[in-house]
Amino acid sequence: MSAGKFSADRAAFFFIEKRADKGALRRLGFAYVLGRLIIIAMMVLVTLPFLINAAPTLLDMDPDSNAFLLKLQSVSNVYQAVGMLAGMVFLPIFVAIYAALLRWMIHGESGGKRLGLRFGEQELQVLVVLIAVTLVLVLAIIVSLIPLVIVAVVASVMAKAGGHQIIVAFGFILGFAWLCAIIWFSVRLSPAVALTVKRGKIQVFEAFAVSKGHFWSLFLAYVLQFFVILALALAVLFTALLVSLPFLGVGVAMFGWSEPSMTNVGAYIGLAAVPMLVLTITGLMVEYLRYAMGAGVSACLVSGIDMPKPGSAEGVSEAATPS
Image (cartoon, rainbow, N blue to C red):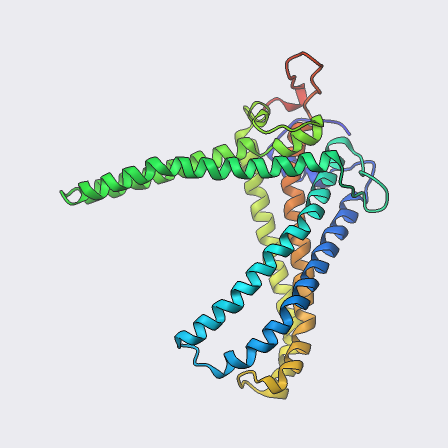
């Protein structure tokens, strides 16, 4: 695979560039959707008995009462706890798929037989870097918020003496500058995982050297991907609406527009099963594409970087120079 020049448009769609293993993107997507569906099915099996027990009580309560809100909150807490547990179970699968995607995009390797998944030293490195990048970003946000809070307190004191418009304008400018700084920091740090896969060792802050001079190309690539994913998400919702219309018509013919009752809960679930399955699967496909496209941006950048020789400075090839 030729390196080529790094640019925003190429980086945004780098994940679909031609490679030796043409089916890797599809196989990894299948693994991602299948893994997520299995986790979701396990969540449903765990939470369904609790929901069935809580549903009659909720239906008999006044929706405006405090008791209803407390009961609803307890149901929500159960779902959140199960969701967090499911996320921890799926994390190794996600890391294996993400590492395989980066290997395929950077080195052109499928990563193994069949689905191309494994969990070895490189996957552990990817997991460490993902956690490290997340912690660094969270820490940067917290630390950078401290002066903003101080300025906000001082501004509120000064506001009592007048000059509200100037203070509001200054606060807006300061907040916008803070947001720009966080975006800049996040974009510059984004190649860390791809760089780890490229060099075979943990790389975090080294990403700043690699992304130097490429901020705007990286940023525009992510912006372009955002609109692509937004369009795909709207298409998924429209498709789900079209699929659900016949089932909605059957439901209205059977039950009218009356409120759901426990006596017909089985019929409601049956009518909603197909539209929900279509929405879930298509939504997971878009979710996978979002991760694949994001990985492609940083993979496009680091694929043009030469491997540094032992004891030498880290080199950057011609392909990675700013366009």
